[in-house]
Image (cartoon, rainbow, N blue to C red; front, side, top):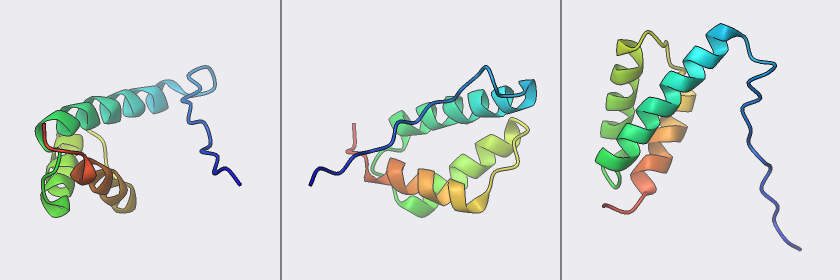
Length: 78
């Protein structure tokens, strides 16, 4: 049986202006860290991710930060 991955979309039509701003800032920081911290220890990536999001006015959820940091830490070093 084939494992199907659900599609992930950010439906900008139904998102409020605030939600769009947060999503854009999150995407910006994740894109930066994916290039600069790929393969780094997860704890370091989580710390930098949380710091940069707070710097942009986003109060990150700790669980989500660690999930994103785990994904970035698993990326091959560039």
